[in-house]
Length: 443
Ligand code: ADP
Ligand code: MG
Image (cartoon, rainbow, N blue to C red; front, side, top):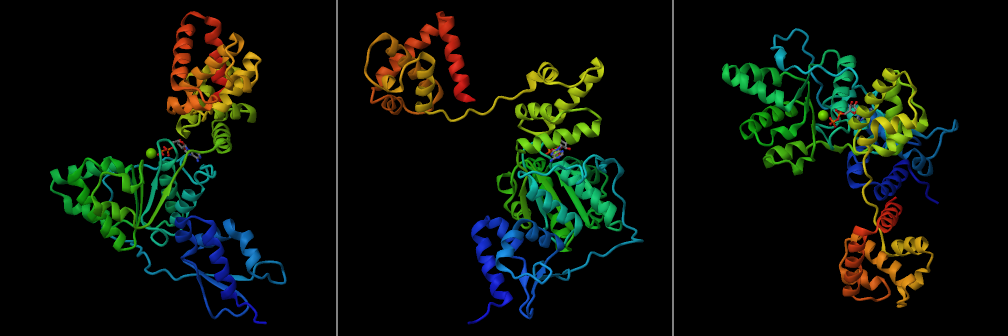
C-alpha cells in the first residue's frame, strides 16, 4: 500500500477546507500557504506571515488534526516557515523629509487600541486582518479596506493599527488622517503652492491610515491626487489602510480608484451580536469605573443593538445619572434613564398560521373553526380579527392571504379588514386586544 506523503495530506486538507469556507476566506488565508515538497515526514508550510499561520491553527486546528499526523509528543507534525519578505521597508533615521503638517495631524485616540477592542463573530475577521497589517505593515494585505455602518469600530481599528505600529515599529513613519483633513491639506498646499512638499511628505510614509474615504466621493478634483499618492505608496510596498461606510464597489468614485481599493483585502465590520454587545458594555463599564451587573448589561444590550457608539452613549448617560443620584445601576434605573434610546426590533416575519394560533388562543376558539365557514358570531368575529391582523402585518397579496384562511376570497378579507379597522376606533377593549396580539406576534 502506498503511504500518504505530507503533500498528499495537505492537498486533501486544502480540498476539504475549500468546501467549508467562503471563497474570500479561502483566497485570503489558505491559498497563500505553500507546502514545501522536500519536507520528509514533517509537513513544511510556508506562510506569507505569522498571522496566516495563527489564523490556520486557530480556525482549522481541529480539521488539521484529522488530516495531518501527530508527532510523538502529540503536536501536529507541521513546521511553519515564514516567507522572506519581497521587499523590506527602508527605515529612514536621518531623512530630511518634511514632517506632517501639524494642523492636519490626527492624534490617535488613546482608547482605540487592540486590547480594548472586543471581538465577536461580527468583527473577528476584520480585527485579525487589522492586527496582521499592524504586525507586518506592507507585507500582508495592501491596502486593507475596512467598511461597515456607523459606530461599529472602524476608526477604533484604524487607530489601533496606528498605536501598534508606533509601539512596535518605532522607525516606521506613520500618518493617520481623515479624508476631510486630507482634502483640506490639499487645498492649503495648492493655495500656498507647496504641492511638492506635500507630495514628498505623503510619499515618504511607511504606513498611511485614511479614515472615512466616502468623503472623497463628491470631490472629483481631489480623487486623482489621492489616487496618485495611493499608487506611489503601494508600489513601494508601503502599507495603506482605508475605512469607509460602504464597500469599494458601492462608492461613487472612478473605476481606477475602486480597482485600487480592491487590490488588497476588503473586510467588513458587522453589527455585534448580543453576547458581544454585553461584553463590550461590561468592558467599557469597567473602564469607566461603573458597576454594571451582567443582568443589567444584558438588559441594555438586548434593547440597543444598532451600533456600539449608541451603546457607549447609553452607558455614559447611566454613569452620570447613577453618580448624580448616588444610586446603583439597576434595571429600573436603566428603564427610567434610557427608555427613549431603546430600539424596536425589526419585525419578525409573521405568518397567517401564527396569527390564527394567536387569535384562537385569545378568543378561546379552534384554529380549524377560524379556517372554516361557520358564521356564528363567536367564530366569525375572531376570524375577522385574524384577517385584519394578516392584512396589517403581512406584506402579501390579498388573494394569497385570503386563500390561507381556508380558501376565502379577497373581498371577504377586505371586508373584514374594513369592519375591524372601523370598530377599533370606537371599541377601546378591541383596540387593546389587537395591540396585545400584535406585540405577541412580533416578539
Ligand atoms: P466607526 O468609525 O465605525 O463609526 P468607531 O470606531 O468610532 O466607529 O466606534 C464607535 C465607538 O464604539 C468607539 O468608542 C469604539 O471604541 C466603540 N467600539 C466599536 N466597536 C467596538 C468593539 N468591538 N469593542 C470595543 N469598543 C468598540
Ligand atoms: Mg469612524
